[in-house]
Image (cartoon, rainbow, N blue to C red; front, side):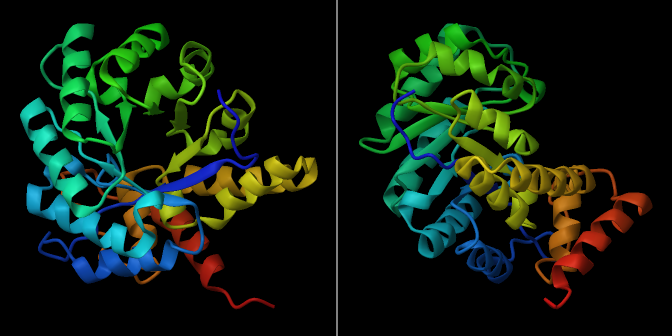
Length: 294
């Protein structure tokens, strides 16, 4: 990897907030982003946590425009991935026209694909993006597309990708991706609890769903790792572990945000209900976050 700042990125994978009828709540999404702008390094918009398969084109454009207005283009990664190359290219053009400078795209999914198909998919997207930077998004658990560091390095070179977000099983291969990719490639992990190890193997940072509700433990951990403060790192890591274990799912994050006064907790996509034990754990974290400072 090339020279980089000593502190890891903490990007929030922001959920898409909807009203009780499941319609996009633009005011709630703006409030969420406004509340995060001074508390972390940036946001990853309309990704898995954002329930992207259930968003239509205008909704994705609206969410991105809100994020760009609040965070600015340097702190927003716009996920424009879809199952179809044609649709991803359309969304990429929309994003660039809106002012996005950093985009991410998940691999094709549902139908089986080979390495050549994935490379052509990403190449079409990067061609549509002009000077904007594009990152791959690898989530083999959801897409069925294997994560292979050497193959991705070839795909990135041929298609013009600048790095990747690695989630699920791919997150455990981050060190292999760091070794395979050239200097300057940026790699984020979707395993938000693994921030310290991500930094130590040369990753850029984490994209965290839990940080959308409780960013401070993650930024405290990033700060402690950057300072080399072992005691502060242990304390922050324990808090990160508690938050990630409690939230666990998109619906858990939405439940936490609803408790914090943001959104309804309603999912756009079908998903299991938040269980009673999970609700109790999350509600304790919400109460702690809302407690007045002594």
